[in-house]
Image: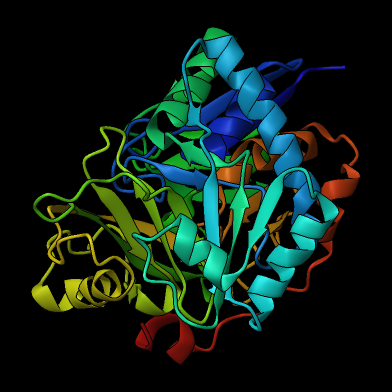
Length: 385
């Protein structure tokens, strides 16, 4: 029997992991990267990401995070590169809010992993946070920070070392399935034929697969870095996530001089295309982030020392799409990670690789393939930011 020939379109957060997994198997794998692995335009841009075991939305994700943790360790061992700094993550939320209740259920399932703090305990232990009267916190002892560009570069480089072919600065123009084969055409009209294709194109997914555009909302994400005020320090400001209805997240910069702060979906600008998105920001763009810092971080200056822009896609449910294309059964679409998929990316890459190889879906991934995703209304996906 001939070896399977598999393509991975997009080698960012998810695609690099799928490429690495496939390169270890008995198949021929080819990756297509729009820029270079670890580039600054996709969802992985912005220096670091949160890794935590706290779940705020869906408890079915918990086994996936455990698997991701195992694979991060393996990737670090194989590459010899430090990919995470696990010094803990603080989750803050209104005690009555549903995401906080889900987080508390996570803590009950794994009591050795977490410390639940009352409002008074949180204020006493973390005085640099302006904790609201109705908020509590959970400290994730085994969480921390991921370095996304290093992770993507390490996975991609190991895949190439293992024999994968990686086309960089290569834009795919179209994907078509005919007679059980999938034809991938680049912008130079060169065509390659594959048995199966994994599409992990992030914010570019809707452009590459126009019939699926209705399922994804493209957004411009802003990351900002705020430095402490004069005579203040970063001490006492760990990585954190704050639940809805006041969702935000923050991570100390690797050099320890600033806190990176970001907001959620309702504060992300709708865009027509990541190719035409603006990379400059106005003071109006920065205002929601400045208001957050004024409210939550009295020890920080309220104008950012720097900022970046990147792009991501969202599903209507905010649960990722990991399912075959509706009209092309040999094409797996992995998209809509909503700016929160990086912590689980090694496990998600493994899921994509197993599908491409025709292997059974592991129990922790079955729910992803069973979801009934709904399309966005036009006003939801485009007009409303």
